[in-house]
Amino acid sequence: MNVLFATTEALPFSKTGGLGDVCGALPKALSAIGVRPTLILPAFRQAMNSGQAIEETGVRLEVPIGRKKVMGELLRSSLPGSDVPVYLVEQHGYYNRPELYREPDGDYVDNCERFVFFARAVLEAIGRLDLGTQVLHCHDWQSGLLPVYLRTLYADRPELADVATLFTIHNLAYQGSFWHWDMELTGLGWEHFNWQEVEFYGRLNFMKAALTRADMISTVSPRYAEEILDPPMSCGLEGILRHRRDDLVGVLNGVDYSAWDPADDPNLVANYTVDNWQEGKGTCKRALQAEVGLPLRRDVPLLANIGRLADQKGFDLIAEVMPRLAEQVDAQWVLLGTGEPRYEQMMLRLAAEHPERVAVRVGFSNELAHRIEAGADMFLMPSRYEPCGLNQMYSLRYGAVPIVRETGGLADTITNTSEATLADGTANGFSFADASAYALSMAIDRAVRAYRSEPVWRQLVETGMRQDWSWDRSARQYADLYEQTLARAKKGEPALASGR
Ligand code: ADP
Image: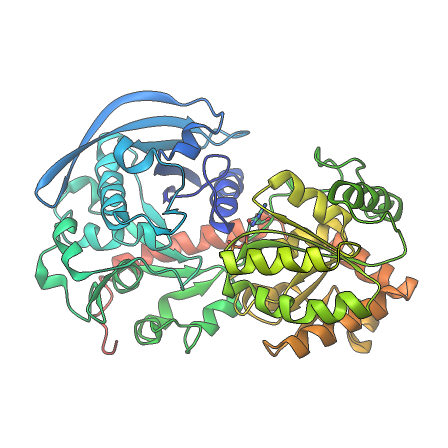
């Protein structure tokens, strides 16, 4: 089975979040079970500077954008440690920029044009490179126009006639919504600008466009697949999602244990496994405290959080509970993140007020993220919604007990600690239901109490460390899903939506 991943992020080429982890790891796991994946992504500056060997293919593309013709070029590389081919669409004007999607004060104003170009370049590339693609696996809004083009402007291309599309939602809240005049850039006629196709409340919406036309739709956890059928998690798209409910599947992301395993993580001062974690984590905790400037204390619980500073991640809840906790609870906090300036300032203020207990790093550092997982006793993810979430799964393997809000992939991976779950051996963290500071602080209190009981804590850490959230299991589910996608495509196009 030949599968082409059309994505804007794939490690080690480009990443702003979980999408990069997924597209860097899943293809390798698929390749190991006999699926033949290929990747195609924009040649962002980040990708060109990633240190990977990238060569020219000599294939040049010409893509119509509105009334202009824009030239691009295809480059070739591969996913490290595998023979999975990676093609990069080079277009300096669009992709040779400091960031992937945005500048400091907002999204790049020509994002619509940048990803129209990408979508059309991908379809051109399938023929020019003779990829023999059977399933085109599109990821998030940036690739949202692909299923539409395939059934409209490119419908009569023989090399694309049998291509089926799977569209994966990694985060429904980011939809690629543009003003209606951007329709002119797409090359799609205005007849497609209607509520059953690419229009959504008067705007051009890439996410909705994909949901109407993809043969199958998936998202990154079973719980999130249910949650997005209703507001507010549906982000306004409940009509089309309910209409496509039978074609919507949830497949949990996995962890790339070749990058995230304390047993051989090169970023750590000490490696450890479930058999010697107390010693190993003790050493890593001390090193982390030294690195971020906290007192070197072994006896206090160290709570951590790493992530995008966005409303989604519940940073406001952390900021609300922390002043009280930092005063009343003998614990340490290490926070690493970048994002909305107001959250950055909030975090830095907390660190300034409680230098003995709170350390904050504003920035993006993969190496520090690894060291935090290893040094932390607990990992906080009070997300308002979380399509899958990777950090809680990394935390389990690193012995940092997750404290999570019960939503999306967090609900699918974390089993709350109670007498019953301790007795049956399933407890691996703490979860709470309400998105409130009160519920979060109760969960933290429960975790800190459990930390004081050595046998309970050992059981929680060891249960988490022994669990297997590798890609292997998910890759098998994707392989089935690709078969289903081909079968679904043979049945014909999805019927037009009967509601928004
Ligand atoms: P999302 O994709 O919504 O941002 P995920 O938990 O699925 O959240 O994935 C986030 C990924 O990005 C994880 O690998 C996490 O470690 C990483 N990450 C996020 N922010 C930072 C940061 N400031 N520094 C280092 N890594 C980060």
